[in-house]
Image (cartoon, rainbow, N blue to C red; front, side, top):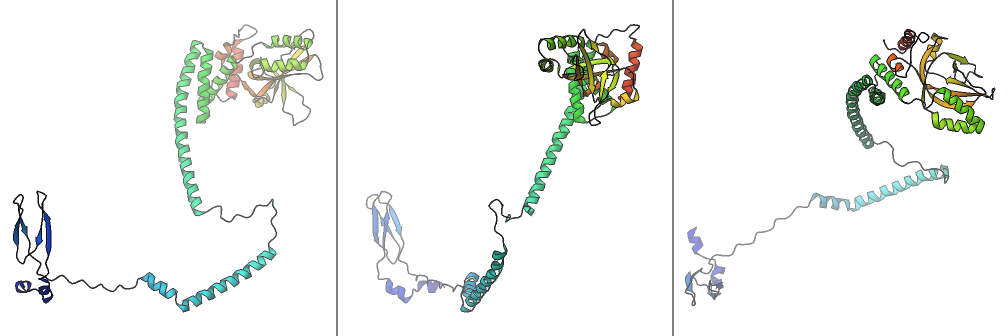
Length: 379
């Protein structure tokens, strides 16, 4: 092997006489150049005396270039060549002709049979409304919505439970202190919390009843019914019934009144009309009479069970109108949907009710106990 390296090829021996120049730059910046020799030697810089080692001429033959391997055709090239053959081209043209003839056969009867669309008619949709993707997406949205609703609903229930407890305790404290306005605000919060919780147990009904009674006490009409009758008589004399009815709505509509009386059914013209009851509390003045009527009360069943018995209830004022049969008589209509039976004696006493031998406290307590049992609350 070493002997072979020492013996250059014939072509190389012929090229030995060809000079092989070199050129380098010294560290001092001077360029050094010359021709390589058969043996290595040292070239000294004339300016800085720096010595450089110069390699001899290359005595080995240059490596032969590698032959390139023939590349096989790719699958794409093979498929393109096959598809471009005359046989495949003929088959493709025949197939196109058959498809064109089928389309013509399918289109001709449809064109003849299809009616013209009116400009007011919408064309049939080209795509389906429900697709698998839309169904999956709708399901995901529905699940997310239900989950969010469940989380929000559970949080609302927790807040309502806490509000019910704190508001009820605060309302009871205010009642003991005699602050009815603050107690009404607290029990209103408890009432709203019960609506969120959806409770219908005995304790919940008692809280609702207390809230209604406090609301009716704190939102009573600004004038008692006797003063309203006097005002009605004077206003009707000065102007007319319509102007007084408008003024009545502004002053007294949706305010509360509390009564202790009996109710008498009023005859109605047709069965379709709601039942009406007249309070046995007529207010008779010199030239004018005022009656109070209750339309479709929520405790109609109680009136059927205890006909003719006195009862204590509260109701909102609805409107005023003149009696069509008696010109000198006016009627105040009470809203039966908001009317409710009274239950608590201590709140009834907050109205300033005084008991005597004619207005017996035990008798009033008996009426309230009977109404409480009807409402489903134990006394």
